[in-house]
Amino acid sequence: MSLLLNLVNTFLYMVNTYIVVPTADDYSLSLGAAATVCGVVIGAMAVAQVFSSVYFSAWSNKSYFKPLVFSSVVLFAGNTLYAMAYDLNSIWVLLIGRLFCGFGSARAVNRRYISDCVPLKIRMQASAAFVSASALGMACGPALAGLLQTNFKIYKLTFNEDTLPGWVMAIAWLLYLIWLCISFKEPSREDEVIQQESSRGTTENDALEKGLKQPLLISSDDKKEDEDGDQDIDESEEAPEETRQPATSIQSAYRLLTPSVKVQLLIYFMLKYAMEILLSESSVITTYYFSWNTSKVAIFLFCLGLTVLPVNILVGSYISNMFEDRQILLASEIVVCIGIVMSFHMFNPYSVVQYVSSGLIMFVSAEVLEGVNLSLLSRVMSSRLSRGTYNGGLLSTEAGTLARVVADATITLAGYLGESKLLNVTLFPSLFICVISIIATCFTYNTLY
Image (cartoon, rainbow, N blue to C red):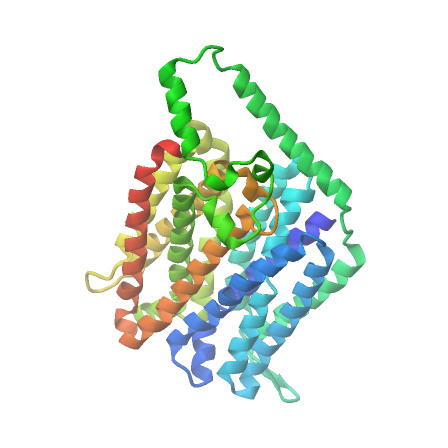
């Protein structure tokens, strides 16, 4: 039940993130701001998550229940402020509400619970369920917004397509908080240590098995190669005691990053940036070029989200058995690049077929890329980054969150050039970062295994 509550938290948070996407531009206009301020409205949640991920990760060293309770309370307050901004006629209340929602992001706790408290034999299934919950939330958010097409008042509170996402999510988090207080069981630290020791034992057995397969006599050339390889290890890992200690700060965690890990984090940044550009500006772009209403935007985003589950099943069950992860990684990056190039407005008129097909290619390939990227990242990352506050999960979460912040800021800044130039101006950085990541992958390709 505790694992289920963590997965529900993940699902609700992703719904909360994307439920405002189809209506954020209309809500901004109704409060006297420009339509492209939707980038700030959507991105405010990601800005706050940059900071919340750190203190939630640190808090999870001591407890899992208390951070989840705090998360639910803050998200309830944030969504209530978001909904009340309409009647208060304040864009600032709207932004503060979204910031509160970001400060309530417990994704670091959800990931930590799976890695530390779930038995090893079902950890893979739990991780897959985490990805599926995120994908389902991403799809259900816009779809739910499309259903909330009504307008009425109760006393002085307005309930319409702009405010209802806030009210619905506030009620959802209140119900979740009640369920959490009734059903969540705090795992004992002894059980957590046992799970970690089990994981460490498996790793050591794998290393022993690998060692038994090595020849007893090593040639001088091989020995020299080993010595050269040892020199590449970070100086901070000289002492055996230190190699077992987790990173104690962002700086020490950064010093543990090898070139291949840095490239994987760059790829993660790139794919999150490209996806956020596609999703966050979809309502503005489709309204400008195709005159789509909120319902059509919601259906488009819902269909994009639904592709995640079958694609992940296809990759996990078939493609990953036919090709190496690094081959899938590089191929996915190239397809993302093709999708970005296809999205540019180069010929008139800009058609729905071009936009939808290029968006689908970009989104699906980015989802494939994310799964392979995280798989490779877990293998090439130092064991010291698997524990403590500043762990690998936190670093990848921060990279993805920063990408969303930068993407949403790009949309808002590009809006000053006019909606006619918004599409191409926001796609140029995506293309540039994608090309750089492909080049970096080629340089580190032989270390990705």
